[in-house]
Image (cartoon, rainbow, N blue to C red; front, side, top):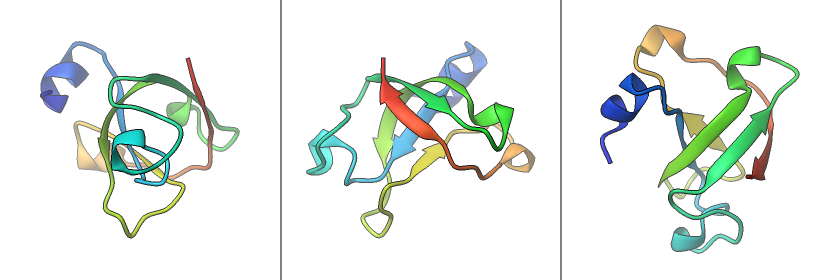
Length: 83
């Protein structure tokens, strides 16, 4: 899965912490699952994403949205649900 190719096609991807990802021992999401994020802090966090990866084991209850450009990085709290 090439994240840059996906982003160029308008597909938004997210990596989730291992406690959330089934293949890493978590309980909730699998690779390729479509998820919806809802945030009251920043509209750019809202929308549909595809679970593409798992974060390092040191992170818990966290997601990392892929951005093509580093200057676009943001931080926000959001609720995540499987579609």
